[in-house]
Image (cartoon, rainbow, N blue to C red):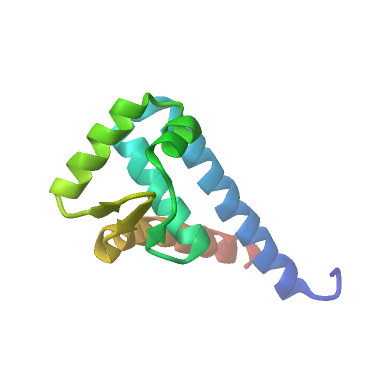
Length: 122
């Protein structure tokens, strides 16, 4: 890898973006209200599996996020009223446009990191 400078640079940028994403996720879990935490987790999960349909239950979401099940249900109902998701038994379908808004923010942060890295290497 010492001979492949471009690969090392791309990997370094990826590690920076991943570190930023992990920090953002950790901070979100501590400082955000349940609506933002749940929305963030749904977007992350959707991106991770590259699908807008997630096979998850309210019980699972409450245990993963450390929230009470009634709070998860209330928040999911609110999301459904806003047209952000569609609930079915054991499955959540995320509206593609709602998920892409968050993806734009993460992509923009990654692009900024790449630009900073390019300036530093010059």
